[in-house]
Length: 263
Image 1 (cartoon, rainbow, N blue to C red):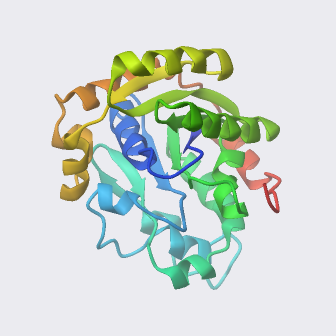
Image 2 (cartoon, rainbow, N blue to C red):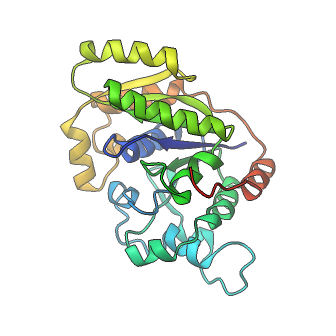
Image 3 (cartoon, helix red, strand yellow):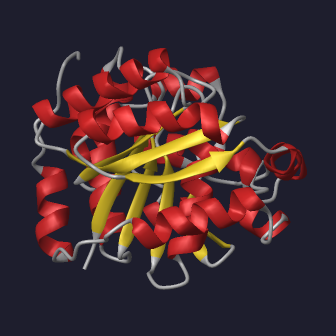
């Protein structure tokens, strides 16, 4: 079985990568989980998971790999690191590597990863302004939308949902992150339930602990497993209904996905 989720938002700074890693660790208690930094232009996953010295990253796969390239010298497994109970595919931060990467190759990489996972989490770019930015949303079965509890942020998140639906990607749910005042956020979360197709998965309190975890290069659930923020992410994972799919069928769907030229 396998299901692919894109973790996405309509703007930067919402905590997508923290959410991707935290959901991955929480889901790994029950499933085989692989998380992928599909934000090839603004990679962050390697900083959150202590992989800044990774020898191979997604950039290498998007340049040198692709399944049918006989000259390829980097296999998908070379960029997969087992940490914190899950498999992690980080992306590099080199601008030259980003410019050399072919986003179309992400289809083959994700298809290969699907063979060894129950859950794939694709940490997606914040904006929808290019093929590399929208591709994770197009490839995913469902999208987890990460927003802050404000009306403008809600509007940005709804744009992500609208785009996802145009490519038949459903909404798995919404994570409200960096919540300063739960009472003030309640009206926004109630409104979200009217407009988003998926449920509110959780509301995550704003936390210095999450920032400390990132600075330490350790996932929040490993750095402070008993914190309020960690408990909120475990609640989100428990609410997320993972659906079974045949790995071979899912992999073929990834390989044959129609890629948009622009959003």
